[in-house]
Length: 188
Image (cartoon, rainbow, N blue to C red; front, side, top):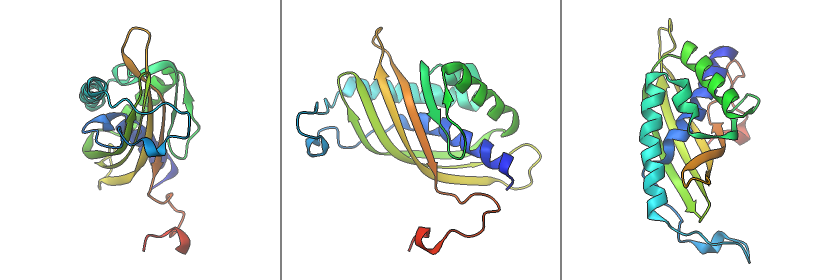
């Protein structure tokens, strides 16, 4: 896998993290993680349902290769942080990232995302999860795979809708041509 393929795969991972909002189960009622004096999670089922609906719409936009629709899930001043790339700040930059991705990566053959932890508050939601995907770039003979983890930070907007304010993806795959992972980094 060359560096360009990795960059594209990384951008794809970011978009899949956004789509990972469905099936939220987690610590929405676990107040043991909050520092003293911090707001506690609200466990708002309506917010979880809205995020799930956004997930379905994002998946449709992503599979259709619609960069504008995919970027519409982000705040105007959002920051997306794909692995092995510089952050993209602003919806226009995020949309351009999706457009570049859709031109070169092709269609995703398989993707799964699982929320590991989700805290919903009155005006924001934080989710942590994992993802796995398979895709075949145009002209490639073999499918490529990636898997890793993500953090999504959603904020409630003045109109009552929810948008992504920040996201970050961490691929668990080694960098291409980097050789094997150091022994301390390998899973036992």
